[in-house]
Structures are given as structure tokens and as C-alpha cells.
Amino acid sequence: MTRPLSDPTKASEYAVELIGICKTFPGGVHANKQITLRIKRGEVHGLLGENGAGKTTLMNILYGLLTLDEGRIIINGEEVKLRSPQDAISRGVGMVHQHFKLIPPLTVAENVVLGLEPIPRLSRFVHARPLKVLMGALDSLLSGLLPVNYGRAEKTIRRISDENGMRIDPAARVSNLSVGLQQRVEIIKTLYREAEILILDEPTSVLTPQEVDELFVTLKKFRDSGKTIILITHKLREPMILCDRISVLRDGELIGTVNREDTSPEELAKMMVGRPVVFNVEKAPKEPGNKVLSVDRLTVEDNRGLTAVNDVSLEVYSGEILGIAGVVGNGQTELVESIVGLRKPKGGSVSVGGRDVTGLNSRQIRKAGVSHVPEDRQKRGLILAFNIQENLVLGRHSEPPFSAGGWLHVGAMRDASAELVQDYSIKVSDLNSSATTLSGGNQQKLVVARELAAQPLLLVAAQPTRGLDVGATENIHRILVSMRDAGVAIILVSAELDEILGLSDRIAVMFNGRIVAVKKPGETTQEQLGLLMAGHGSEVDN
Image 1: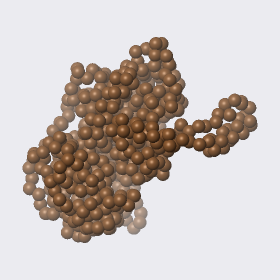
Image 2: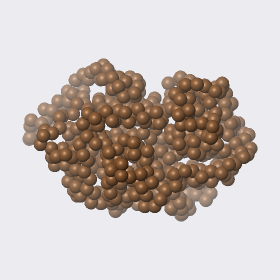
Image 3: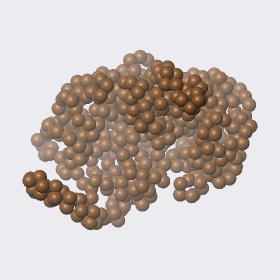
Image 4: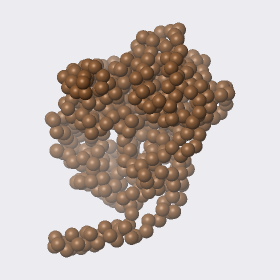
């Protein structure tokens, strides 16, 4: 558990003060430029900005993951030097990261207690280097012998998860969990450490509206108990509901801090991107064309060998967007993976353009005209060790104009990549830089740009705007509608019900591995869809 904060009677009104923070990365990228930000104790403070604006960098400095170039950090009235996350944790700072910091082979409980195991500190009591090295080795040996009480940890995890509406099996292996459940583990891990200052980096990006509302109830309890919350988000609904004050970053600079009651979503969006943003998706009525995708009585198992998709049938037509709504973990992931060739079905069939592609691998299905925006961009969408231009042509790299006779045409790769970077406003320092240098939102833009550029017959888009700011989301929505109007068949899987309602021509609701309803957007509401997603009512028998 964390150590207690310094005496509150001696602290200022601010839980956190970041004074004149500067951070520059190799290649001359100025992520933070003289940022001064003060967070009041007991408030929920929103941190908004475009992808790559410097939000996560700033909070990684507060969490000790990055070292600042210039500036000062004051926590609870005391100036501190944070050299590691452990330094931050010891001062009551916790962080839920956008990209999970979990070890897949370990269980939920093992991940939660990681770093809290009993570790001897014999090496702290000696200073002579030879003896210190010896004591350090002895520390490591003894730490492996000391038992960790996982039974007690599992009980605590169950209590935390039950209290906060995030039920999860502490004994489950993280590698078997969906993206949404992994997000819950990250939140529980921070709550387990009893953080007094909680940083949340895009915590609701894979949650349904109902789950978001439940999380808001929890966060309001934290605030009422005196805890301080910093909410990094690209969504405007969240800060307008939850936050007391909102700060906006743009291009590494602080644009301003406003009280929630003194602003609006439109004003915040303009502060973020520097121009007015169109929120409503403009989509003209369109008659669907020929059948492109046919899924017939499909049955798919998850990683544990349990049925995740149960006898599902659906069809998607040219010039149509079929939205799939459902709480994370109800079979959407396995359905998508079976369609795009990442998972072999146990029964049923999949046809694309009249061709049976059941059981084909992902490369074969891609050649059949299917593009895929995966829900986990780092695991399925990118090769992080590759550079940006290599990732932008991935999947087309073996075809003209990018290769011939077994040789890559680097010039053609560079030209196509530069065009996509410009068209999709991907913020990069150099096309030869590793994909790891991009912010999460810019990694998502890269994946979407590559998949849409393939000019597919069928696009399967799972969470295509996950982690994107309002400006980038507006652009992706416009492109999806234009592809639909050009005759592309699209499956859209999204946790954002307003996105599903705004873009879809038809909406299929999944619950417990089955399609329980198919709705027209104009004939339903978010509330009705939410109830169906929770298993209340079924209108379709598969």
C-alpha cells in the first residue's frame, strides 16, 4: 500500500502543481512547452487536447515514467523529484494508462500485486560497492523465497471490483481477457494501491455508456472522499459531466483552464483543434447494393475453449454500414476475428463477394478484399519495432508499387506514406521513426489510414475512433460515410453508441454471443440499445 501523504494541514490548496514543465524528445519534438498547471485537492480535473498535444507526456512526468527537462513538480505542497513510478506511488499518485501495463501470462491478482511483494532491503544498509553488490544479490534471492499472500489479494480484488461494478475473476489469466476486462484490471490495480491522486488516461475508451456511468459514480465517490482525479480524455461528454475544471493543451502548450459551468462542448472542441468542429454525422439515405458479406450460423470459441459466438447469422451489403453494439466480452471480438481470418470458427460459414472464405488465414482473406481495423492497435494493428512508413504499407508491401521481384521500393513506400500522413493528420517527426514514438491516438490514425487506403470490398472496423480527438474522429466519420457512399460494405463495432447511431444503416445488438436484435437507427435510442446490450429483451432468434 502507499505511504500516507504529507500532513494536509501543512499543504497548499493544490494537490498537484506543475510549474514551467518542458519536455523534448529525440528528433526535436517539443511535447511540453513551459506548461504550468495546478490541480486542486479534491477536484476532478479534465485534461483535453488533440492526439499528440502532450497530455499523456505531461502526466507520465507526474507519474515518474518520464523525467522533465525543465520545471518543478509540487505534490501536496512539497516540491519533489520523481525518478520512477515507485516515487510517485509512494506519494499517493496512481495512473491508469491508455496502453495497458500488464503481463499477459500472469493472473489478475498477480498483476495487481506486482511490485508490492515483500522484498528485503539488506543492500540499503551498506555502502562499500563489493558488499553492496553481494547484499543486492542476497535481496533478490530472498525475495523469491518470501511468500505472497495471493488469497488475501484475491479477496481484496473481489471487494474492490464488486464495490465499483467491475466484476472480474482474480484467478483469470490476463492473456485470456478481452480489452475491456484488461482495462478493468488496470483500474483495480490503482484502486488496490489506494491512490489519493488518480490519473486516468482515456479510461472509458472501451466501456459502454452504462459502464461509463458506473465508473462516474465511483469517481464521484473518490472526489467526495477528498481524492483528486485527473482525467485525460478526447471525449467531451465526460468532462462536461464529471469535471470541476478543464485544461486544454494544443501542440504542447496550455491553451487555457476553464470551469465546467463556464464552457460548452463546442467551445472546448474549438480550443482543442483551433477551429469549429462538426459533431453531427451528415449521411444521406442510400439503398444498399449487392450482398458482400454472408455469415451463416457461425459458432466460434474463445481462448478458453468456451463458445463466444453462438450460431450467428448476418449479412452486409454494398453501400451499407452495419453497426454491432454490445458490452465488451459478448462475442464481438471473436466474431470479427473469425471474419477476418484471425480465428477459425467451430461451425458455420463466412462468404465475401460470393466466395467461401471460411477458415482462410488473414492474408488470404485480405486478398479477397477485406480490410480490418482491430480493436487493439498495438497487438493486432502495428508492428511496433517497424518504422512508420513500413507500418503504413503493411499488408500491401508485397504488391506493386511497393515491391517487385522480391525487392521493396522504398521510394514508393515513402511517397504513399507521406500522402497518408498528410491526409489523416498523423503527427510524426520522421517517417523512419519507430511506431513506438507515436502517441496512442496517432498510432490509431496510422492503422485506420492504412486499412482504408487498401480500397477494400469489405471493411471490418472495430473501435476505429478509439483514443482519437474530436477533430480526428470527425475526419474518420466523414471517410467512413464516403466509403459507404462509394459502395464499400462496412461492419462497425464500437463502444460509442452515439457513433453507432450516427453512422449505421442497421444496428445488430450482441449479448452472450448471440444477436438479440437488429434495429434501424431512427427506430431506437441509446437507452433501448443499452438495455438490449445488458440482456433485457431479445427480438431475434438465431
